[in-house]
Image (cartoon, rainbow, N blue to C red):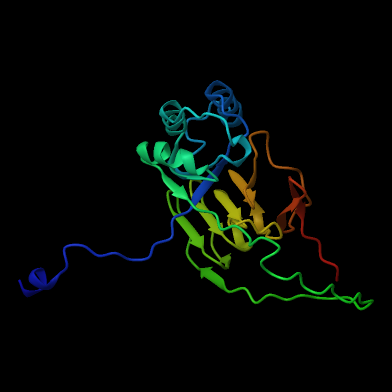
Amino acid sequence: MQNSLTRKPIEIKISTVVAVAILLHEASVAALEAALKEMTAGSPDFFDDEFAVIDVEAVAGNAIDWATLIPLFKSYGLNPVAVRHAQENEHAAIRAHGLSIDVVSKPRHETEVPAPAAPVPSTEPQIIIKNAPAMVIDTPVRAGQRIYARGADLIITAAVNNGAEVIADGSIHIYAPLRGRALAGATGNTEARIFALTMEPELVSIAGIYRTFEDGFPKLAAQQPVQVKLIGDRIEVSSVKSTG
């Protein structure tokens, strides 16, 4: 009885929420609907109730029909929660539709900060090492589970099953089969990679660029680990070959 009296009716804690970014290159709802149909190939569960941030930088100045666009995204399993790069005169209309404004920090004007001195060219090779922490998971990741390694690499020593999703701001290392979704470089790290002993994924993504495998997984050398990396704006899948 004492516990029920001392327990607070509400608590606020820090929580990490992963959201996909929807980059609009067209303001026409009809064009966007056609693009979504093509992207999902009619699959009703291509997006699994994902939170989404809509980026309107590329369509700045265009009128956006929020009343039609938001239900369209929801019908495809995308739940918009915020808008990024919106002009200030659009904020009221966006908030009126229940969305937040995602504020993107802008670099200072170049006159505010003196330009740094040009670096002295060096003929010596340079190696830059960044100390990135890692999250380690030793149990299978089952359907419906989502694991996010914020600001870190993700290391998994058990299988990632169909319907599961693993996300990392850094790289993802899976010492077992990958059969679900794996999203590395979630905050934009284009150097992130995905490694797995066996690759049978539903989807892989590096820094927001994704690839699915409806037509089958690429034929690779047997009994060799596989890596996924980003080459330009293209996802490349290859065997990890020993140099020893």
